[in-house]
Every structure is written in C-alpha cells, then in structure tokens.
Image 1 (cartoon, helix red, strand yellow):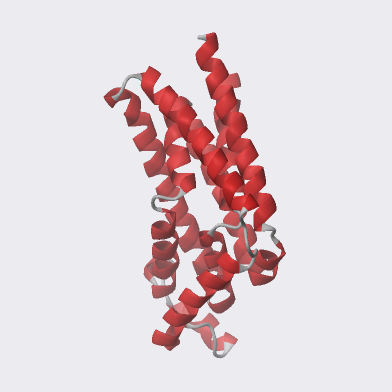
Image 2 (tube, rainbow, N blue to C red; image 1 turned 30 degrees about the horizontal axis):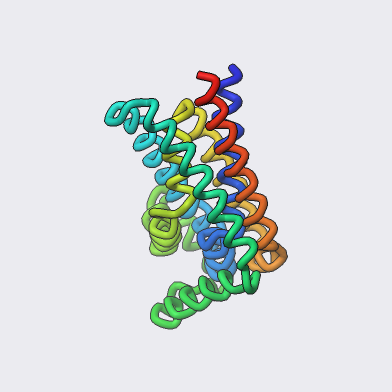
Length: 229
C-alpha cells in the first residue's frame, strides 16, 4: 500500500509541477480561446494520456533490458539532473511571459495560414452542426487532431516525459500512470477553462523553482533507498 501511494503521489506531484507553465499548458489555454473547449480538452488529454502510458511502458521495460540496480542509479541521476535544470531555469528566467508569447506567436502564424479553423460564427449554427455530427466523428475533427498533435509532439522528449520513464522504472508503473494521468487532467482542464487569463497569472519562476526542489527531494530519497539496500 505504501509503495502504491508513493508511486502515485510522486507521479502526481511531478506532473503538476512540470506541466503548469509548460508550453503545452499555454498551447491548451490559447487553443481553447479560439476553438470549442470540449474538443481542445479531449485532444490535449488524449495526447497526454497516450504519452504517459508510452513513457510508463518504456520505464517498465527498462529493468528487463538493464539490471534494476543500474536503472535505479540512472533514475537517481535523472532526478538530480532535472532538479538542477529546473532550478537553473527558475533563477535564469528573464520574463515570465516569454514562453507564453512564443507559443502564441506560433499558433497565430498557424491561424493566419488556416483562418477557417478559428472559432467564430453563429452559436445556433454551431449547435445544429454538432447535433448532425455523430459523437465519435468529433474525435477526428481538425480541431481535435490539431490539439492532439500539438500536445503530443510538444511533450515528446520533454523533461516530464523523461522523468515519467525514470519514475516508472523505479516505482510501480500502474501507479505512475494513474498519478500522471490525474496530474495531466488537472493541469489541462485548468488551462482550457482558465484560458490565457489564468496562464498570465502563473509565475514560471516559482513553478520552476518548486519543481526543481521536488526533483532534488526525489533524488535524495532515491539515493537513500540505495544506501539502505
């Protein structure tokens, strides 16, 4: 039971502090301003769930390819490395709106190239179109696919993905997946519902420093478990 709670809580805390203020967080917030929130939320969540499961599977398979002792050591190094990386980002942060502006500029360029996908028009017309459109086909709409692809490829190789792989190699992968999915759902829902106004209220410096401290704590915890064993 203790192991289950530990893996779940580690994954949840790590995901929340890694994703708040992340590029995909800002992307979800901005997309929700221009497109139907339901489709944006579904697309972003689907991508994050798939990414979390894939990362956990890689972490679960790692001990079968490398000895568990070495995967534990690698995980410990990753925690310390990500902790120092996050602390460096926090201390060297120039402007809290820099990442938000970068994401917004990229999405604006995309909207200029594809003006037909921007939210607009008569609400009654939109509702009637939804009634005529089968529910399952909404998952293959351009908006859903855009939200999915932007989020999925934005997370690929990201710090949170690598940390999930390391955590799944050291903890119960099922618990890591549950904690990760809950954390992703909380962050993405907040981004979609809060929109740009919420994103602008977030201090990237505080989030980065908090995440750095958390990773360092995980690193020391992993190091102590190595010494005790």
